[in-house]
Image (cartoon, rainbow, N blue to C red; front, top):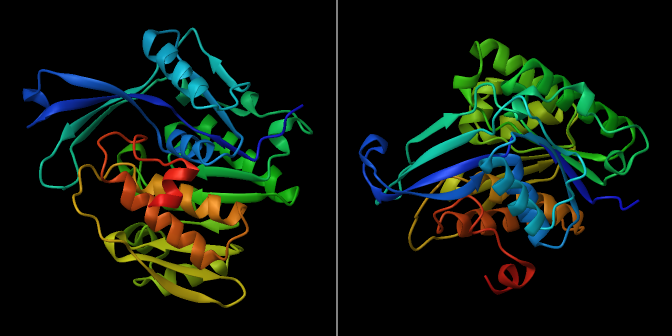
Length: 314
C-alpha cells in the first residue's frame, strides 16, 4: 500500500484556450489543455518529485478520457478518480490576451461529474489516502455542491484529527455561490481546519474584514492556523507563523506576462513543497513567488510548473 505524500480533491476540467486574441465569441480556433486549481497543484507537486493522490470524478466522455490520460502521464495516484456514467466532464474556455491582463474565462461545469462528489467518495479510515503527510484543499470544491463541501470538510477534519498537515487556498469563485454571506461562512469554516492558509490580499479582505496583510494573517492565526501566507501579486507575499515570526517576501520581476491564470496555484505548489522539504516559511514563500512568476510566462495552467531541475536553474 503506497502512501502518497499529498492528497487533494477537486474538479479537473478540460481547458480550451483561444489561439488568437479577441473576444471569445469571435475566436474560431482553440487549443485543448487541462485546468482545475487542485489539479494544477497536484501536477506541480508531482513534477517536483512528490507522490500525489487525487480524488475526483470524470464523465464517460472524450474530455474525461483525455484528462485521465494526462493525469496518469503526470504520475498522479488515481485510485480514487472515478468515472460517473451519469454526468459529463466540465470544461472551460479561456481568452488569449496580448497585454498581460487577466483573460476572459467561461465555465461549463454545472451538473458535472465532479460536482456530484459526496461523502461516499471519502477514502476509508486507515487507507493510504488517509495517511498522506498533507491534504490540500481549495474553496472551489465546496462551491460546486453541498456534497463536495461535505467531502472537503470531512477530509480536513480527519486529517486534522490525525495530526496531518492541511493546506487551504480560498480561491474564491463568487459566481458559484448563492450569496456572499454563505461563501464567507463556508470558506472560513474550512479554513479553520487548516494549518496553512494562503489567501490573496483581496480575498483576505473580503473573508476577514481586515484591510492589510498583517491583519488578515493574524485573523487566521487566531483561529488555529500555524502558517498564513497572503499573496500580494507582483509585490510578493506576506508570511506569518503562530510563533510570532512574520516578513514580506518580495516578488520576482517577470519579463513578459503571458497568462495570469494558474499563478496562484503555482504559488501554492511552491509554498507546500517548501514546507514538505523542511524549509522555513519565508523560504517556502520565496519558492512560491518563483513558481508563480514562472507560470505567468506560459499560456496553459500547467505548462509553466517546473521540474526540480528547472526550479533549481530558475
